[in-house]
Length: 74
Image 1 (cartoon, one colour):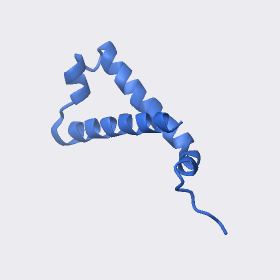
Image 2: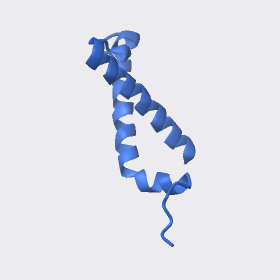
Image 3: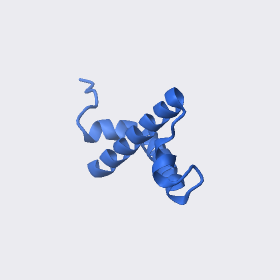
Image 4: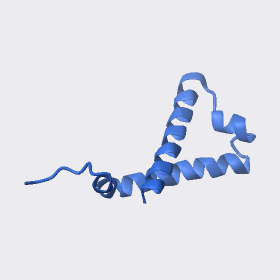
């Protein structure tokens, strides 16, 4: 399951960097690479980034536990 965590984290980094570029420079890197915001590949990337965010949000406690980051209550 760690590989899914890593893939989701990478996609969130890509999405975060893209939003940073949009906010600072009005430059959409994903749209530029994949042929515009409406292009199928761009929409797939946007969808995967969104799905990764939902996955990370729903799995936050489980991810901490899998990675040994959960606080122990002893």
